[in-house]
Amino acid sequence: SEASGRSMAKMKTLQPRIKNLQDTYADDREKLGRAMMELYQREKINPVAGCLPIIIQIPVFLAFYWVLLESVAMRQAPFAFWIHDLSSRDPWFVLPAIMAVAMFVQYKLNPAPPDPVQAKVFMIMPLVMSATFAFFPAGLVLYWVTNTILSIAQQWNINRRIGAAVAGRN
Image 1 (cartoon, rainbow, N blue to C red):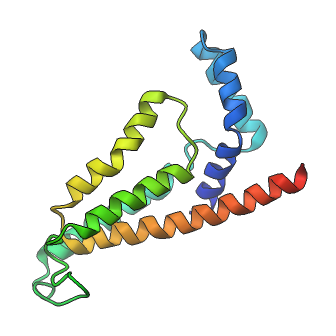
Image 2 (tube, rainbow, N blue to C red):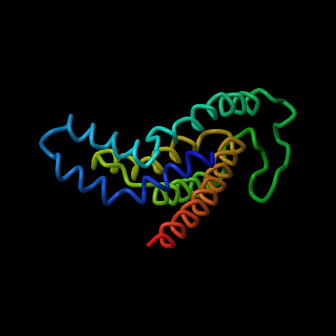
């Protein structure tokens, strides 16, 4: 959503200050947590704002999955290009590859997580997700790719606007 995108873009602009807090309170996790929460409150940022759209999408995703699996009318119905059946997997694994690239780009647009282990997990996640989705119905992978590409466009636009606003203030 627009609000979560703005929150993530603001988080990205705060990365130097967050890094400074992490260096200052490297030995005291409790003080670091308090200082981070104060920073978020001062800047009016909700660090978990990005989770809500995903939670809302889960029922839609599951419903779409079951529709693709159970719909007899969708079987062998031609779609476009190499995808001849949205209810079966992509025969050439093109959509999962596009999905991995799109998810990686989306990851790069968002602020880096403060925890290095979490950052590595997020770097590997596109590969794991695309390997998992390689055997899902092509329609479901197409939905995920489309959603990811639209999210990239939205986040890029938000980052651009916030970057221009920050540059205008300086």
